[in-house]
Length: 466
Image (tube, rainbow, N blue to C red; front, side, top):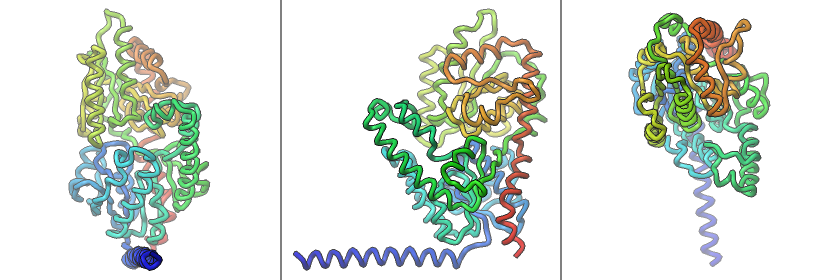
C-alpha cells in the first residue's frame, strides 16, 4: 500500500513539475518574442454594443498617435482584419487607418455565462485567465489593452512582460450589488431562491466580499485604468485603490454626425419612441414594454397612437430567446401593433430610426454610463432614462438651467414621462431637445480621442521614442 502511495505521490509531483516547467517556458518564450504592438483583448468583437464602439475608437486613437505601433485584436469571433475594419465603419462610422491584426481565440466558452450556472462571476473571471493565456501565448504585445473588463487577466499579462492598460465600463462587483443581496432583492444577478433565503443571502455576501478582495487585488496591477463615468470611477477607486492611475474618459458617442444629419425641427407624423440596447437581461426591456402599454392605455383617445421601436443585437442563443419572449409579451399586452423589433441594424439605418423618434427609453439599473442616452440627445430625441448611476450623475443633467430629459425608476414613472413627451407642445419639446443636444457635445468622439490619447501617451510614448 505504501509503495502505491509513494508511486502516486511521485507521479503527481512529476506532473506538477512538468506543468510548472511548461508554463514557465511559455512565459519566457512569450517575453522573448514580445512584439512592438498594442494587443486589444476583446473576445466579443461583433456584439454591437457601446463596448465595441470603444474598441474601434481606441484602436483608431492608437493608430493615429503611434503610426509605427501595430494593433492586434484578440477575438473569439471568426473574423478577418478586413471584415473587422469594415464593420467598424459600417456599424459605428469609425474609419481605421489600417485593418488590425486578428488573433483568433478558440477557448471563449470559458468566459461565457452559461458555462457557470453557479458562482458565475468567479467562474468567468478564472475562465478569462485561461482565455488570456491562449491569447498571450499566440501573440505577446508590449501593450495589453483590455476593453472588456476582464481584470483577472492583468497579472498574467504583466507576467508576460506587458504594460497593462484597461478601459473599464463597469466594475465586475460593486457595493450596490452587495447591498441588494443584503436587502434580499431579486434581480437578474440575484436569483429569487437566494433572495428569499436569509441564510443563502448571507452566504452570497461572504462570496461577494471574497470576490471583491480578489477583484481589487488583480485590478490594482493595471498600469493605467480608464473608466467611463463618475459612478464607475468611485467604485473602481474604492476597490482597486490606485487613484493616481485612474482616469475618467467618457466613452465615444456619435454626436457630431447625428447633429449634422438630423435637424431638430423635423416633421413628426406619428410619435415614435425608440429603445436602443442589446437584448441582455440587465437592459430591462420588459419594464419598457410594461410602461409603454400603460402609457398607451392612459393616452387620450383623440391623440395619435405612438409606436415603440426596439433596436438591438443578440450576443448568443439566450439573447435570441429573450427577444422572442419580448415579442410574445407585446402580444399578451395587446400592443404588438404598436411595437417593432429591429435587430442588428447598420449605422445608417440606426440614424434613420433615430430621426423619426421623439423620445428614447433606457431602463438599466446602475448603468455605468449610457451611450445610447447620449445618442438620443445628440439626435434631438428626448431621453427617458433610469434614475441611477451614469444617467443620473453624468448625462441627464440640466444644461444652462434647462431640462435635458427625464429620469424614472418604476413602470408608473416611465409611463408618466412617456405621456409628458407625447402631450407636450412642440416649442417645449424643441427647447428640451436643444438643451439635450448641447449637453451631448460633452461626450463626443473627438472628446474621447483627446482624453484617451492624453491618458495613454505617457505609457506609450517612452517606447515610441526609443
